[in-house]
Length: 264
Length: 266
Image 1 (tube, rainbow over the protein chains, first blue to last red):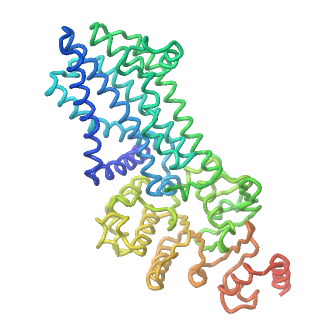
Image 2 (spheres, chains in turn red, blue):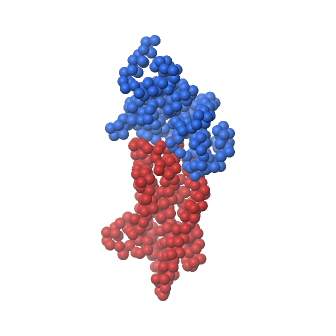
Image 3 (cartoon, chains in turn red, brown):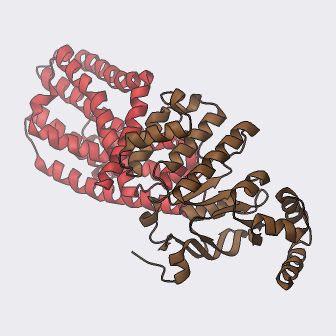
């Protein structure tokens, strides 16, 4: 019970921050909406006369939404940790009975909440503007989303591990990391477009398998579960590695000092 | 769970043995040992860089020692930290609370982290005690230094800790607010029988609050004892002068050893 209580404590801490700042709420909604609107018009323009319009537009919009979900999931985990650095609160957290795994769980949970707040309205707008209802994908969408969330979370936890080592000097990574790997995630094009060495890198990224699976479903109407199995296997491995890195980084900080004064 | 199986550990709140912390070639804390009895209030004194905050950090488990052991309430802090953290707490002007959260939200979050029973009642109780009710729904970052210190202390007492560690609790406060904070600490000690360890540069505070003093210099404990005994031993009028004597004396160790021998001879 006390473990849930501590996770709840941290979730409420991040939720209070979110609730207290309307610019944060607007920022959550603004970028995914703009992305979706832009890509919706662009895809309509490029495929104007193609008979496969609904499928191509759907594939692009679906990719935009899942990509943004990945970005938001990662960013929310990293931002939760940065909130502690910005407020010089790490010391209080580290002398409390909160265990590292409970901390990870709370960051992951608030990331889920923030991402749903962020992406939910975009689903509605896509259906309204472009007649594309991503929920019509059905159960495969659940598999795509689980994998996308999982990848966002382990990326976010890896960034927090780096932040713990490098401090706020590394905060730019929070915003940059997903865009650094974007070319290899094959969000808007198939993996086969990439050079061979790039395809090897793609094979190691769960998101690339998810987007391949999404395209197969929307363009060929085939759900290829092998993509999801590969993505899930990679995600589970990376999630374990990222948690190990987080705990290792926390222990390293306890060795070299600075947790009590860590901040801006 | 690892137990520290010594009689000393069972009867004492804190037992530190041969504690050392090195950062590269620098020994921030060098082979110190001390015992703090349950229910006592002890001051950790020393100039800047003496090793007080490093020692406090190790006691709180946020810094691993290079060598030595720390036992808190009979538990080994290196391997069994979580067994005692619920019974400890700390306040420091150098570790802020989240500034965008209101005072109430801060207390709710930390109350939940420490699994405080009847949390709302406890918050009301502390709000009355520390006179923070007027600004309990204001963001922490908008409070004055004195108000923030009171809130930080309220947070530190949320779980009614058996062991309370305070790092310069009245730093940067005006004399009136400093006096009020000291009264609140005294009141908590009387009511709870808690063990308190405080690092301070305010010698009046030390004389008023503390039963024992550990004097640190360059990472070592150079002297220890009750404030009155130290004042007598150094032939000074107050702790301020004792502090200056210990901090400034170039041949410090030799002088102190001589004084300690004399004291034993009496």
